[in-house]
Amino acid sequence: MLPSLSELYLVDCHLNNMSPSLQFANFTALEVLDLSVDAIHSEVPNWIFNLTSEISYIYLENNLLRDQLPKAMPNFQVLRSLGLSNNYLDGPIPDWLVKLEHLGYLDFSSNLFSGPLPINLGNLTSLVVLYASSNLFTGVVSEKHFSNLSNLKFLSVDSPNIIFDFDLHWIPPFQLDSVYLGPVGPKLPQWLYTQTSLKSLGFVNSKISFEAGDKFWSFDPWFPFCVITRREAICSTWTCPTTNYPGGLTDCWTNWKSLLHINLGKNDLSGKIPPSMGLLANLTSLHLHQNNLSGVIPLSLQNCHSLLVLNVRENRFSGSIPNWLPHKAKALHAFPHYLGFCR
Image 1: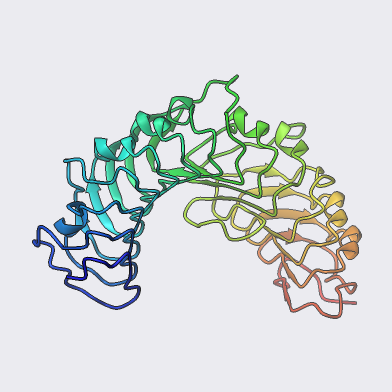
Image 2: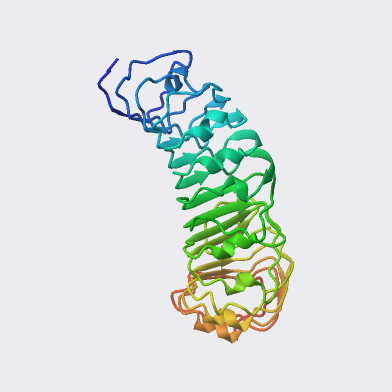
C-alpha cells in the first residue's frame, strides 16, 4: 500500500469512510497526512495512530470525527503539526499529546474535549500556535499552562466553564501576534499589557469593564483587530455585540487612529458620542445601534472621511440626520423616531 509515499493530501474528497477499524496501513515513509474537509463520520481511524513512519504533519480538521483520542502513546516522536479542529472529539486531552516535544502547531479547537486543560501544555517548548478554543474544559487556567512557551505567537483558549487566574506580576516568556481568551473580566489579565507585538486581540463570553483612565485606553494601536463578543470570532476592529458593556463611551479614542471598524451595537450604552471619535480618519464603519445614546451626532465625525456605514438606529438621538456624510457612503441606519430628517 504505497510504502514509499511520503506525502498524502486528500482534502475535500468526501471520503466518508476511512476504515476506522483498520489497525495498520503500510505507509512506512509517510511524513505528511492531510485528510481535512473529508466528511469522515467515525472515530479517528486506528491506523493513523499506529503509523510506523516518522510522520511530521497530520491534519484532520473539519470532519465529523467523534469519540476520544487513544490513550496509548502513538509513534509521533517527530510530529510538528497536529490539526484536529472542527470535529466532535470528546473526553480529556490524552497525556501523550503534551509529550510531543517537537510540536510547533497544535489546534484542537471547536470540539467537545472536557476536563481540565493540561497544565503540562507548558512543556511543549516548540509550540508557536496553540488553538484550544470552543471546547468544554473546566477548572483553572493560569500562567503555569504557558510558562515555558517561549516560542508561542498565536494563542486561543476559551471555554464557558474555565476560570483564568493569572498572577498579577507574571511576565510571559513570549511575545504574541494574536491572543483570543474567554471568559475574562471584569479586568483584563495584566500580562496582556506586556505584549508589544499584538496584531489581533479577542475575548469571548466576557464581561469587561473599561473605565476612563483604564490602562487599556493607553494601549498603542499596534493591532488592527480587537474583538469583545459572546459568540463571534474575531471579525472586525472594535466590536462587542450583545456584551455586557453598560455606561457611556469614554472620550479616549486619540490612540486608536488606525481603527477601521467599530461595532458597539446592542449594548446598554448611554450618554453622547464622544468628540474624539472624529479623530478616527480611517474609520469605514461605525455601528452604535440599539443603545440608549442621546444628544446630536457630533460634527467631529465629519472628519471620518473614509466612513461608508453609519448605523445609529434605535437610540435617543435628537437633531438632524447629518448632511456631511461622504459622497461614497454606502449605508445610513437612523430610524426617524429617534433622529430628525435632513434639513
